Length: 232
View 1 (cartoon, rainbow, N blue to C red):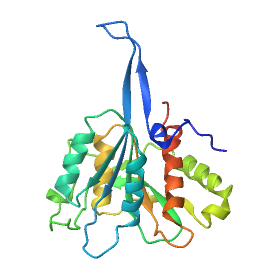
View 2: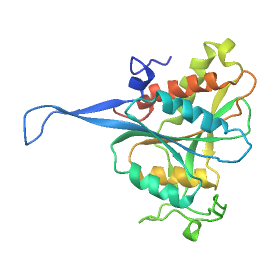
View 3: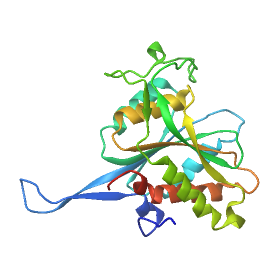
């Protein structure tokens, strides 16, 4: 059974502080804010509704509180690199990237991302130089440090307690990311942002799988996220 790791409004739940009691300059205790990063790609297609991931992201950004760092990124490999560099400079507990997919009633948590073979054009018609993420090192594959099995087990158990609300919704592990800009962003965060990283793929918001239902599940994941990231 899942137990919430924090109390209070969702804005409070999206933040944690790490206490460091000893500093040379004074005797006072300080607190380092550990931000929770949430990213999504904007999809500015004229005449079309926002994707399910963008809708969920916007709701989370509204209620995230000052310790949540939302970032709606342009669909550009160059912009991804810029955002990752910015986020790597802040102290963060977790980074959650949201994207959409077509499989109904299924939230997917992606375990693995790859450094190369990115041949899909971004919105500007560009691909990354050499079709790969640029970094010093030889890693070609990176996996999240998050315990995906425990997260999936806990969230499915949580939803099972109220099937009238959650209907047929479930969460599953997707072993490998796709070689698209979402996969590029995921590998980049795994490589450069030293915190718990996950990529969640959001299903279509239709039938019993409403925005409210998905938001409740995502908020529950974020509220308990540190349970899956090792020691807090």
